[in-house]
Amino acid sequence: MGFYTTRWVEAADPGTAELACLELLRSDPGLAHTRSGRIAPMVYLEEIVELDEPPENPPGSGFSFYRMGT
Image (cartoon, one colour):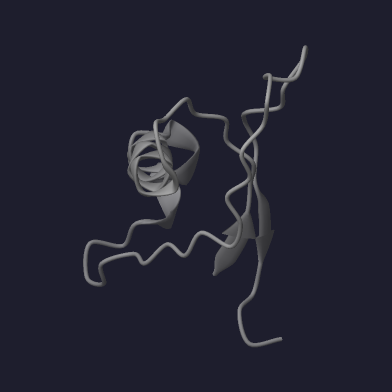
């Protein structure tokens, strides 16, 4: 199972932003049902974009799930 989502973090550099995003995902209750306990989940960040200013009404929750390999 894979998913797409958008998260907004404030960080000094892309590496720190990636770690902050991963922590948000680890603690997100919306993903708790996807953890089987047998296999460690793997997350790949597809894109990190630096913004000059944060958007006024940023999204920050929800997921679009898909079956991987299809």
